[in-house]
Image (cartoon, rainbow over all chains, first blue to last red; front, side):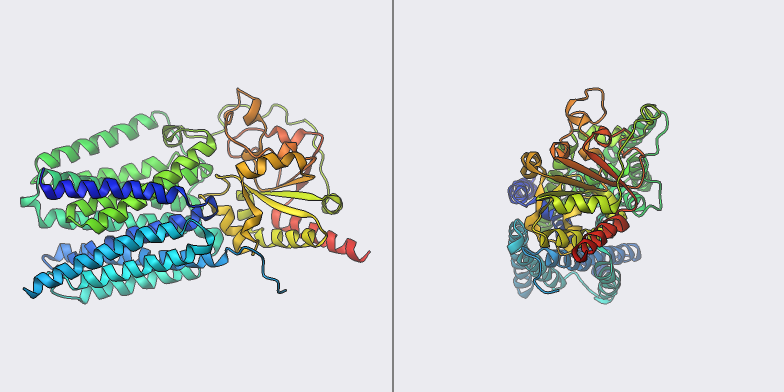
Length: 98
Length: 465
């Protein structure tokens, strides 16, 4: 195994633990926004797609890369927007007006 | 020289993005800081994307911009105009998009680097393709079921598990062969095709009430496929974001399984809720007590504490705003109103909370199962709106019941139980709910939205008379 690969594995395992510890604390109240937020965050795959679409090494890879940019941009933009839209609705006390 | 500087700059933006992603999830733990979490995530994403655009290997921005534009054109309307009752469908669709992106990038990488793939990179690539493809079709199937384009009841046939598992075994075998011989380019499409078919077959036998677990599991797979992509591209930011998403989906699916007292294997291969046990037919003649909205209103008005138990039926009937009116009318009369939320109520984790928050119900009135269960003994009325199996006392004492051992809301301990339900038909698990035959239970037959509306009307009528 190359040192770089070992480093990647360390990163993966440690990030997994951080994820467990942080996400365990999320109140069940917010489990739906949690799922849409983590979905938006994992759409960071867009960076891989950008490079493939921009390198233009072959027609096939450019097409696949562009499609991947579309799919992940949808998640980035849509994911953050809908998470914020949901979180805006959670209020401690109902509005006093009306 | 300047290229080195740019490369380092890119790495710095990635590091900052990774930190912001962790903070983002950290801030999401409480409603008070949750929106800050979204902003942190957005800034992290922006940094990473800008950093990536500086990459020297990019020769043209044309197709990237086309992708950004089309992606936003799909993503923005989906987020802005989607009604909150459709959130589970949207989530399933976004898992499909995320997995599709991973599968496409993996495919492109494979054909670009076929000749120089190390066994390790090829393993990560195979995993990325496998998880990405099966999550893509699986999530599309879940979307179809949630949107009710496809039948929501489990579809099963004899030998289904054998077929599914052998298909998976063949796919994994092909994956292993490709790791040993990356040059076998003809097998690659076959490998991917099998993974795509497996995703479809995996979700076919899964029924509506198991969706919270399955959607969480697909969430986890989508994250893991992104992490596998990080290994292929040697991109640590991708690995971190994928691991966070994978961990989140995994935790949620464990919580959902526990809330149903079932195992992963049982959810995926058990085909729950086929009602094939032949128990229907017996006991159907047992008498139940039904009541009108006016009678229900009179009892609710006289109560001092009411706990409302919402379920998927409330979402289907879009009754959350009427429920809010009922909550307001009762609160105005000095009745203490709370909501009891079972972890698997609805079609995805936290589904009920989002709907009730949308209807402007303050979130400190939404209580989890463990918090509310001790309170049912002192509750005057438990009002069940569109929930069934999660309130069935058989789960506590009837060893022969398929839901035996499942943690339930102890509504039967309240002084009066009211159940708003369209008919006497059995719940998702296909079993009778003995709660309906208790002396203290009143069945309120009708559509949840209009029935709750009628109760509210009766309450305000009483005010003037």
